[in-house]
Length: 216
Image 1: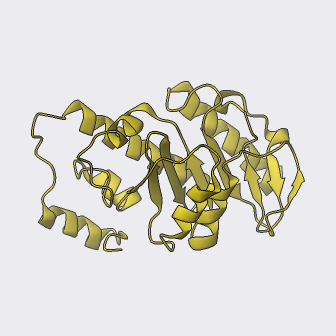
Image 2 (image 1 turned 45 degrees about the horizontal axis):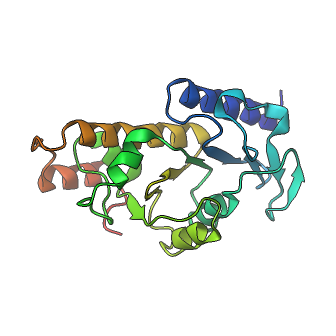
């Protein structure tokens, strides 16, 4: 089996895992990954994470031209913005996960640091998550907003919409976006109860030990 065939299968396997556990539903969410030749494999427009077909993934060349497969997700500008601004990006995942969307609607969240510091793992896997304003689905302005971050964030939260995470490969991106949703769930579960989160010294110790992008 070729490396690209393996990547196609991995994308579909991980997407189905996210779908089966309710992290995105219906035909929501999209996923992409770099191929060895610098191109991209992308989930098609209107596709369901629970039923992706490896043979029908949208295939782009290294210049972002569609060369094979079904019509890609309308959120391509969002994906391309991460690849263009983060040299380490090997995959991008976008979900409509409920708890992170719920947290994005709360009036007192910090737009520059969306997730509260409740556990070490969101800090380690995501750094600071930027909360972006609401955009219409498919609006190219989402991509422009990500480009405006100049590659300094690996994850953003689209208000009233869903999280987007870039990482070194598709497995790492899926793991990171799950951590984002889990932390948002903890935040909503403990909301109003004054939970004891990590203090500044603990956060900085994590940042130093795990080389986290944090001060940007």
